[in-house]
Length: 569
Image (cartoon, rainbow, N blue to C red; front, side, top):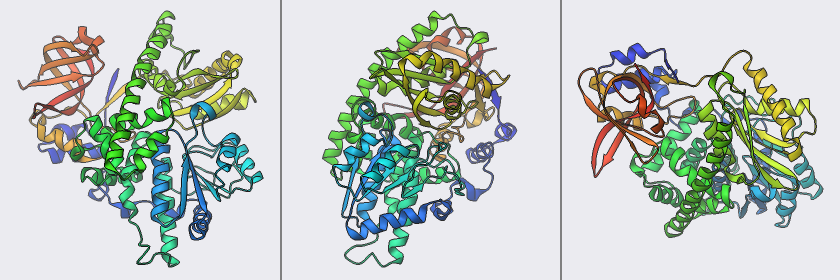
């Protein structure tokens, strides 16, 4: 594991106060002006730059005024669930009389809007279908909706294929000709923008009255923050605003009952909520519904206004997540045993991995791909049997490889090999015939190798530099914890330095519990999650890359190091 220091590491080392340290941390992430640190909602990119927005608003306005049935069709992940809940809550708040939702089962229908899903939706006799977090690659499904006389409004953020669906309107910042500068909006982020634009139109045309008051859409930013973090989209300036504003409302207790219940069941402090809580504790419980059963349970949790019902939903989601964890552990062990049998070494790793288990659970494939990627630092696609002689795959990538482009290259080189695919740079989903798995694997390896060229991808940790000893304090840890939503492309502050190892032991089978001493003689606790195999390195003088954490033990709060890697000196 290579540790690479960011450009402003000298300013980190020279910092004398937590505030000065934070300014240097921001500078390492390209933020230098005070106005850019915590900009408000007024600094969001204007919605008018979204291509197709006017047509989409007109479609929705027509149905809102006419009392027509608007059917939301969402994806089965946390972004799709929060986006679906936002759409239903937002449209109802804006005065829509008939709003319902449908989240197709991944096991029965696969990903996205398909002709079969349209046939199911048609039974509800909608006047308008609105997709959330899907639809941009659903040309055949939109054609089927046309045949049934149902207009389709697509809201999505995934990359487009060669053919756009012939929808009544498309709102997607990544569609050709869209000038919206923030290309990293999540599905729930796109829906938030659409609702805001619809509210403006309704306000201009006198829709709101004393009996039908204008809603405050910022009340729904908890859902936007959760979906944005859960989808691991880059936290550019626009997304940081959305997440930071949503977290403010969560900390103030102004989230919907479902989000509050999920925080409680996860044992997280709502008053100290940060992006890591959303990504590592709340989103997995929400995702568990779509992975193992149907996401309607997750959507209902986010829709209910009854705290008691929200608690019941949260408990059910927690149980599903525990079951998911058990399945994941079994599948991960099988995958690692297979890879271990290949006697792989760092010098001869393939450019990518394609894994298949005939008894693997489709809902956990993405997690398995992510776990194997973390171990080998290569793109991974994991496949499972989906019946009818087909297999479905879910892939996760590394920064050096645009995964959807790699799969698109395979589809281009071998027409008909892949039945359906979609995704973005870091994740992809696809379906193919089981007999075509070996051919796909060969072509996929070639597509990834072409992107990598002569570069051998190596894992690295980006460090802000050496933290001054006087700032190794609880105050600094607390400040960094709440300072900003950290995430992809805006990483959690990480530091590196040399320490003397005092104690090292394994806890909970997979974790390292450490006690280290700084060069200045300060003794401090540290923990390395999932670093048990590095126990032999934890002796003498070591270099640690670490994040600052807060240990809350029996009500006593203290600073501790969250170790990312250990290297002998």
